[in-house]
Length: 224
Image (cartoon, rainbow, N blue to C red; front, side, top):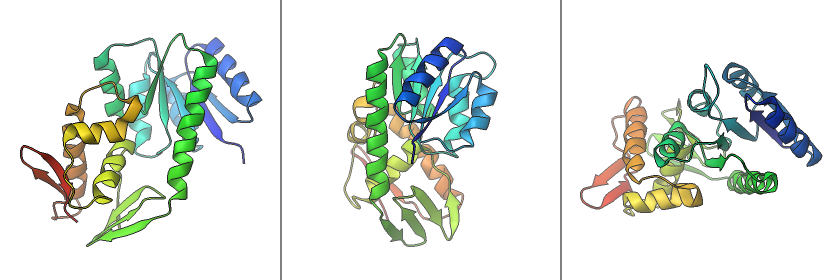
């Protein structure tokens, strides 16, 4: 089965170049030239998304935020921005990597393949665990409480996955950031606090149990 890639950029020349490149590598390619079209194409469940940030009207960050709760595939930003603050915003929006323009197309291709290999490894690890009223399906990357689904962003699930698979072990913010963001990380571990806050808010809407416990002065641990 062909892997599906969605390419979004308001520069048609860039889109056509990338479309040709990935079609030669046997990808099924979807394209969009603006944010609204990207939202519609995302409904086709691509395996990976290349998303330009600097688009008029609906920019790439907004598109990422809107689709992230519905698709879990890797999202790679295409951007000329290199400031750390912009990168942090991108990761907080749910992005997984940054490709800075102008880029080497073979390096881009290698990064796409690396993300897809990582995604495939995760999907092959079929694991289902229960923590009281919570169920976590690690292969489908789904969390439910009393049968009610809890929609987590990609990085939010990664954090839940890390903590829940190491119940009782305390992780400081820097360690969580290094593991979850890995080589993609170019921001601050402070973003972990924001992600934990969002996760807790979503879980609190369906459960009174505090699944992520703060160990003051140290970090966080899973309280299953």
